[in-house]
Length: 44
Image (tube, rainbow, N blue to C red; front, side, top):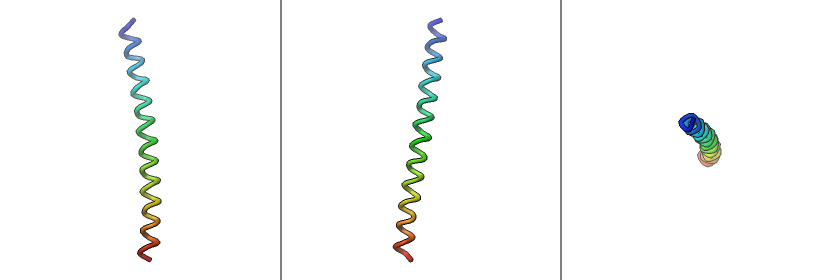
């Protein structure tokens, strides 16, 4: 039973890490889009 509980906790940690990674990816993409907009304004 302890192995099943450990595996369940491991899966929960993996899910949380994936959710965090997705959040970081969205934040990074948003920052890139914002900085890209600023650069287009400068070169025009």
